[in-house]
Length: 472
Image (cartoon, rainbow, N blue to C red; front, top):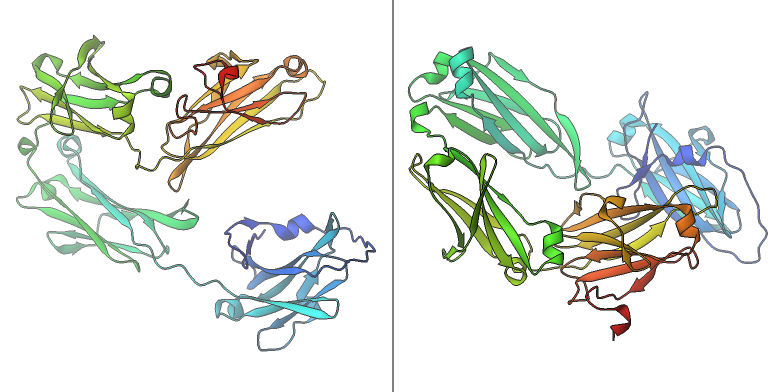
């Protein structure tokens, strides 16, 4: 099965258009109004089979249904009737859409041979060109090298290196391993490239693994290099052997726990926590600093095997993206251990567009699902709450997905299931979206409301801190 790309309009979307059309049913409608077609080329998204490639042509929004297709090689002869097929038109309202596809030799297609599809209508011809798209410029790889662990050296007496290349295109590539600058050809395992999609582009990742004896890696002044060779540019990474005595392990692990979205939107201040685990008995001090290096007041509590230092921040300081650093001084560490947290806001907040939708409600006793969709917002922190006849809905009654990033903005869904009885009784349901860029700067909320009577989502400017009838 082949998918096809709209070549003449700005999209990279592929579908099985010819499968969709099938054999079709031809319908002729008499009308005094004539409307000429808009014609678009369709390009195969994948390779053909048996040495052939399928290309297509689509004519839209024409009436009456009196359109035929013709095909020819650009600057050359027409294609035989057996080399292309016109599907019966499909009617939508008062206009029609028709599709034709042609089967051409892959060898000609790969040699950049172009073809022309002509839609003949009302004595006039509209022609579009179909040709192989220009290849995207090569994209260089991100390259990482991973050295063997001390446990592997000690217990297995081996030294395993991994070289990982990611997000490169096109697929063709090679790895070269070197030990002390000399190329190595033995003990190498290279895995097949893996294809992924990133920003509407196809990119690849690949891994090569090198196995050395432990003694060869432990030699004085030893280093191992991995070079990734690719059209987008060659990249090299090097690992140097360092004696274990030169790498003191941190006696504690330090992590920062950000505030919940409930805190961010429902409280006047937020709580940032520095979580310290490991050899707690030898801790000298734990401090929070702001970006000017000033020590901030925090509180301490012990939870299980962790020591937690809480910093309380007012909403204004949190929203402007101030940097906060947790600094742990430990008697077993020569240097302080620092972990910094900065809330991403980009200084360009964008409010969400909010839509409230419902499944079709029928009197069959089934539940009705309400879906609240927020999109195009930044930063990513957002909070959903639901209300039924202006009474809060318990959070256990609805689910909210993880936010999804598209370019630099985010989107998210929240879903509430209710009984058909409640829905048919005319209860009004509201989806409340909390976001710092909401147009209501006081409550920072956007509300959408729906009920079974109107069956339409309405926009409500609602300040949850005040009765709605107090709104200006």
